Picture 1 (tube, rainbow, N blue to C red):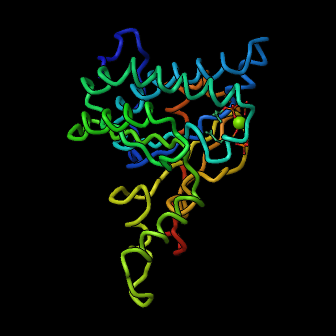
Picture 2 (cartoon, rainbow, N blue to C red; picture 1 turned 90 degrees about the vertical axis):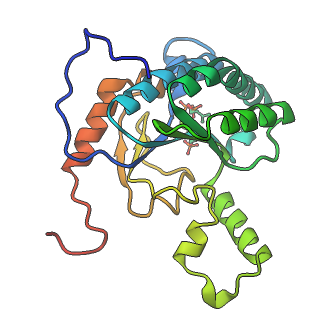
Length: 244
Ligand code: IPE
Ligand code: IPE
Ligand code: MG
């Protein structure tokens, strides 16, 4: 990644860095509204902000980041917004992939292919193939993603593979999710104040720590990410057991 600027303030080291962080990038529309701008201007600012947060995540040593970019429910928004989002996302792929590749980012897509325009599907596939051997940071982009759809797709695959009922356990299901091979999410950050999961990583987040900030996504910066990591370090994860 790009070297940290020398003017940057120090961030005291943290004892626990989560292996897998999820971010529900919410509040683009409200960010735009507060400035008297159209919602799509908020989405553009949101996509621009990704670069900054990615760099910060890599600086803090977060190995896996899953970002919620477009849900299976978001298709129900007005056509103009959906088309605008698809356009902005495609522009991001066009402009950023080479740079991300140079910076050692491994790109993945989680979600259904269907309904995503073919040209965009092809570009995403190419980006995933180009970056597959990078290991600085895994960036999972949840696009046309829904946690329930993910479980439905896993069940279909398990049945198609002919796995007998008696052999189905939690590992079998986890290995058929879009995130197969990745550890469960440790920390889920949601911007813009909403206290809900909105169908994001519902299986993988069973024991995640949740952190909500009122900041809208386009304003979420390195300081904000650090604050979330500090909060994570103050949590006691018990996984149903008794405290130490
Ligand atoms: C999040 O911002 C981005 C997407 C859901 C695509 P929103 O568009 O949900 O912004 P708000 O919640 O309306 O402010
Ligand atoms: C969740 O945000 C989806 C993404 C951030 C992509 P939404 O804005 O769609 O969620 P709700 O409607 O507030 O639950
Ligand atoms: Mg929203």
